[in-house]
Image 1: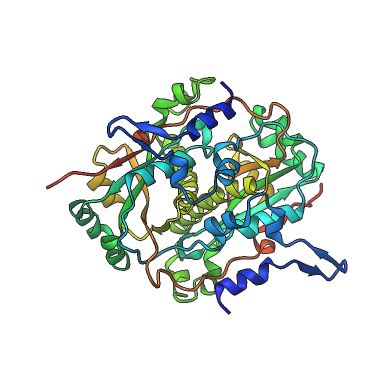
Image 2 (image 1 turned 45 degrees about the vertical axis):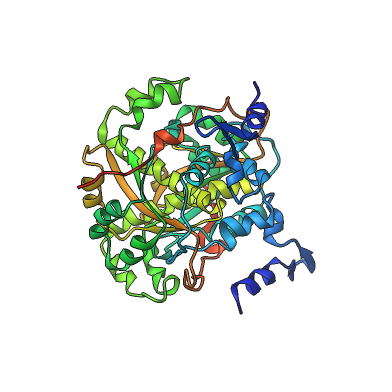
Amino acid sequence: MSQRDELLLTARPHIDTRAGTTAPAEEDLLALDRAAQDLLFRQARTADTFTDEPVTDAQVAAIHDLIRYGPTAYNGQPLRVLLLRSAVSRARLLPYLSGGNRAKTASAPLTAILAADVDFHQRLPELYPHRPQARDWLADRAARVEQARFNATLQIGYLIVGVRAAGLAAGPMAGFDAGGVQREFFPDGGHEVLLLLNLGRPGPDAGRARLPRLDTGEVIRTYEGVG
Amino acid sequence: MSQRDELLLTARPHIDTRAGTTAPAEEDLLALDRAAQDLLFRQARTADTFTDEPVTDAQVAAIHDLIRYGPTAYNGQPLRVLLLRSAVSRARLLPYLSGGNRAKTASAPLTAILAADVDFHQRLPELYPHRPQARDWLADRAARVEQARFNATLQIGYLIVGVRAAGLAAGPMAGFDAGGVQREFFPDGGHEVLLLLNLGRPGPDAGRARLPRLDTGEVIRTYEGVG
């Protein structure tokens, strides 16, 4: 059964056999229209190959203009993105990648290094103006690194959704030497490198078959403990 | 100027004064339709108050059924969600919250504890079947905790988008004693508590004015370094 067939099947209302009534399918309980659900999640796939079509600066700006509204603690927005377009810049990155990530990164239209700005707190008087003292709460570097990493990672979640919102495929990669990439591209020591991301239109055979996902009952439970 | 007016303004094509031509507005460069952009990002807001309308288990399942397709490393899906519905369960949580988070958490229709399953690797032979040995790469607990935290945080990014996709408002909260919540609700020691999330329909005066966001030029740059 193809993935499309599976999707069509799951789109049908299902019978709740316990109640003997027809319950709405889960996607019909959402306010987001079905085409958007498919674009961002249900049909979207991590890509391992890409076409040659460039990803333009205007597209990248449009993605950022959308996802910058996603929430972060203290409105701190610590995510920073370094785009590698040129062959020279890409050649600097490749030695730090695991073997399986090199060919696709060399050939992707665009590769982004996703990092957290450890000194994001300096902007808080402007970004969180009703509590400008938040900057001073984050004077301790170790606490700040943790906050920067956590909130930038949330923003990477928004960013992957945003790449798909632009009709592109995202290829996130965790298999690389983060310390080496940090020293090579952020020698000032003020950034924590979190993830690499290839972007482009998916190529032929861009991904493998959809891997299994956990069911709701395996992920979500209701706490009913008493005294 | 109201937020709606601001949005309408930014929806107009803008003049690129450098080229002397009319460039498309950034939202028009996206494949995602404008209503979905508004629902998920542009009009969506973190809520501090909620109406009494319940958030049903069916809605929560529909949100999960959407966002479970978001990518994670090794397809590990470490996010676990504990829902607090009853007054008893909510009363157990409140002492661990910062003062400013208590009233809204006591009155929200639903509160979720978002945690990472440190033993997510046990499922990898099933979730990542082409490389079942990935489970053994994660035998070291410290490395696993880091992976679990990072990937569950990515999934929290998807989840916040998913809550909005259901037409609900999300109220993420980082101001709480994570160690205390962990001991109270996950005494087995196998979970890392990351964030709390209130869910519901936004109430009157649900949020403050939109806080400023960084411009693309402050977040994204292109690496052009040579030799």
